[in-house]
Image (tube, rainbow, N blue to C red):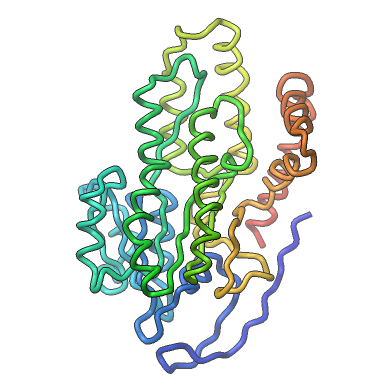
Length: 347
């Protein structure tokens, strides 16, 4: 059962000298506040803001009633800025500025950071990413490398650029949009999941060193998200050339995986706006943000399976049986979860 925790609202004085009501409920506000710069608010750089989660989070923070954040929303192609400008409204050029940044180009990243006053980045939110699904035999090696260049090496380039300044200031927060597939691999998501596993390992390793310099690290791990990103990935999958694999694998992909994925997204999927508005655990505080945060509580039983059995057999056997042997149980479970999801949205 999903329990909605009511959080106590308290009166406190912010760095601008004004009293306000605050709540520890908003995950993104807390993450953005973890490296709060007294007197100036926090300056955030977000990547991948032309659509989806990046757009929703940029707008959410730019519209903060207390104006605590200066948001630099970036995208590779500025011609795609229209949707963000429409959603951001009056916050444009006030609390939100749109800049060009290509995570696959070191020069582009450096130019964007150099354009900021004193190169100050209090919070880096790495959100840019690409997806890939389908049988491995049908994937092109160049496409796989391009995916890693964005999903993993794009993050590495960004962190490499801002980390030295954060160390020098002894302050900062690196927030990375990961995925539950960085915790647990899923059928026909081999390459995408591998890139997210790389992201998780990179951040977990870096976090230890970063702590020595008072720099926070947080991995945000959504489950299924109904967005333009996912729609495009699955649209491309329906047109995929499967001639490179055997008939049985092609059948499993088209007749089992794609229909099941559609049901999972219908039952468990969050919208980008829901991810941007998600609440964090009552035990999390802005000054001590979590290393990991899953945004979808209904998906947590799936990822918990991995930690329940160190041998790894439990999640493998469970997913295998649900997909290939007990589809009736799988469908019934999704129906129950769909009801719970609707219930949580109403509350």
